[in-house]
Image 1 (cartoon, rainbow, N blue to C red):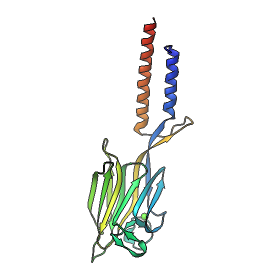
Image 2: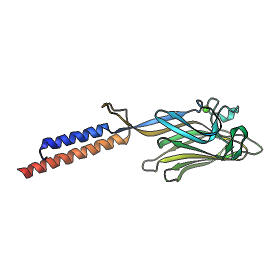
Image 3: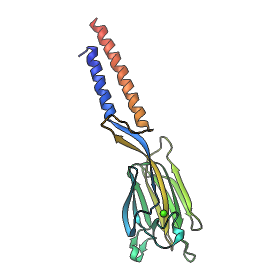
Image 4: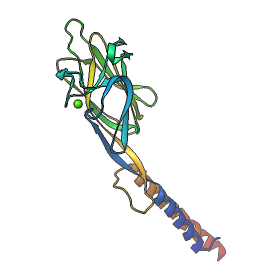
Length: 225
Ligand SMILES: [Ca+2]
């Protein structure tokens, strides 16, 4: 087993294992909420570019109030807690979860203008240890608020986005984009376009195995001689 040819065979097998492993790439998700219609409170998912997001606690349809659409004629809307007739019963909380943890997220949010009983809304971005990493409390009805958050290197991954609304009107979320690292497996030797750290880590592991393998071969050759 200490013949250099055997060492090279083992290194070749390690290389094969490496090339069959995943290729990490940054993927962009985008939705304008126009492609789906949910008229009473229900969970629904939207898919785009190998990613998906699940929206819980709200509705998504053409309600006929232009101030609740940042684009088109639909948005994701959450009612304050209680019975809201044909839209069903709301908890006053909307939650977004993701197929892959976002590295960056952006969307627009606005409350419904009800002068007699203004809606009050807040947004929390929650990380994998249930910590609130970003919070915006002053969501208003006068204009859209742009929410944007980027995970810095080494920080905990994003688990969810939570939207709370109280008062006399709805809160609407529209034009949501996020980025995430997706690992894809190729079995035909063709690598996918990638810019993620996974590939770099893979090559570093391979280089380390190559160096230690050659070192072992030399040591064994010296012992033999
Ligand atoms: Ca829209």
